[in-house]
Image 1 (spheres, one colour):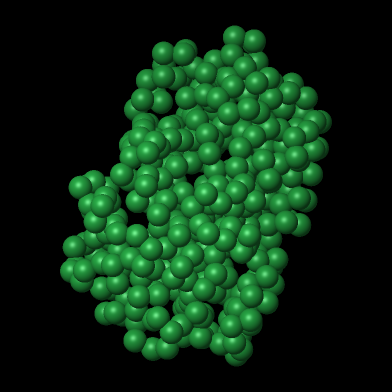
Image 2: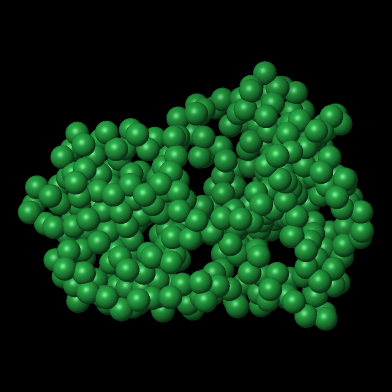
Length: 373
């Protein structure tokens, strides 16, 4: 069976779908399966010029928005690149971004295209303050879900909560499938260690949606309570300087280390003790599963895919979104009680191996793909 995995970003950075799909290719390497990966190189800009027509709405109603214009141009570029580079037939295409799915169906209208939706661009833009609720951009981006439903052969997402989110934007939400992300356990190697001072770590893009301002304020409370810790922030983004300034203002800059972007954080994350990320929204939250596989205790917000991964008090701790004191209380629990922290980490690792292993995803996908043979 000839399969094409259509990504948006090149699979060159770890985390989520970017790391899962190349690992899938290795697991599908057998005489019965032939899998290729395809994505749009970052160097491709303003190459596509064909007019765009959607089947379920008129995108021109939103064309005055620069964000919409950029999105449409990227879609045109993806179609141009697809026509330039792909000319052989496939039995099935599995797309992992709306642009990829719609472009593939445009170029290969007779080929079954399965569409996985891993995250919500409009929610990210809203939470990061780049667009407003009810704006042209939000209405355009949410209209794409119904277009995907109409054009592709089946929709999937990564969590029950995100499926619920999509309900308002499609005609048949009951037909949306759920396939959580899977992770290659070989990438994550827990390291036995004893840190005299509890080491907290977070890995994310530095944007408002990740709630790192809440984390820094919670860490200020920890310091005021006389608790010792070090916070490691791995990642980069547009609000890095703002967060560094906030850490200084709160008097916790000496306890906080900003690493910037790191290509393979899983290589040293196992040496820390607690993974914490107070996101304001997450479709799935791949970093929690990855941190669990590194045997770290998990602390997150009771939102989206995070709350589907964590049973609070069993394999991690959940706190309300935006609640500084509740986050500080949860972190205090895992700082002052190492035995409790180790138990959370052990249970979290077992849960992640059982529910989010790459073998499980491979098994589910093979069954699914064979339905289209």
